[in-house]
Image (cartoon, rainbow, N blue to C red; front, side, top):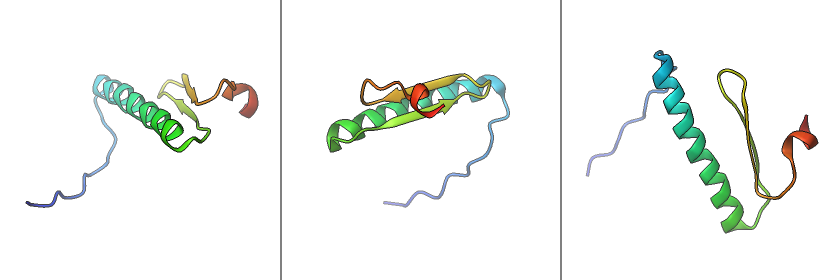
Length: 70
């Protein structure tokens, strides 16, 4: 089985494609944060700002992140 090479990371030029990729990556990141909290019994907080500055947040507890860290 051949090994995969490194993926070249670079900015996505097409705005629509970039927004779609951001949404999918954000969902995957939030899922991983949830899994980490569940499997390892830890508190996880995640803040993500979109390219237009919109805040998305995840917290494994009922704590409001933006109140504590803004």
